[in-house]
Length: 177
Image 1: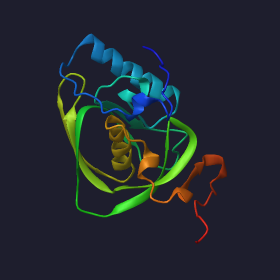
Image 2: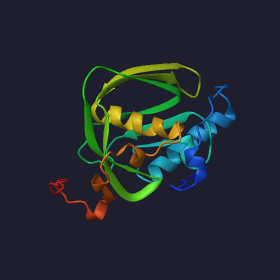
Image 3: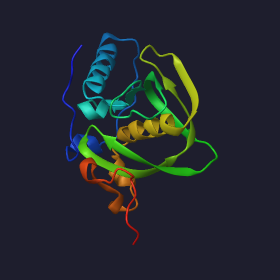
Image 4: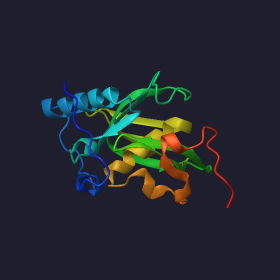
């Protein structure tokens, strides 16, 4: 339908908690999802949350399939997830490098749950429930953080592990303290 402008870090709309979607299978919701997918794909993103395009609703989209920004990760199926609920599963937290369409050119080493179960609805109101791990789990957590007004730098415990992608060493190793 349309490629929308992605809000950048600093825009106050990105700090707000998004509202639950109450009505499903409407032309407005389908148009929003279509615009989110068009925008995500045009920006080569792995996912996008509605607040990133200025819509304060609890909806995210994600997909990773031959994405030039993530050439070495396992595929993540196209998913439209509305009113998501995340439940971390037993297991360790793991650090991984993340970027964000709302923070272009930057990367950070972010701790996330390595395994989780997520549930929610699609745009038609059909139930979705999956148990995932690895990059798929990371993408879901990253996108759902946007629904609560959180951007990934807020999760980085050591800001020496945050910077411009062009300045971070290829091996992703940082000097010892």
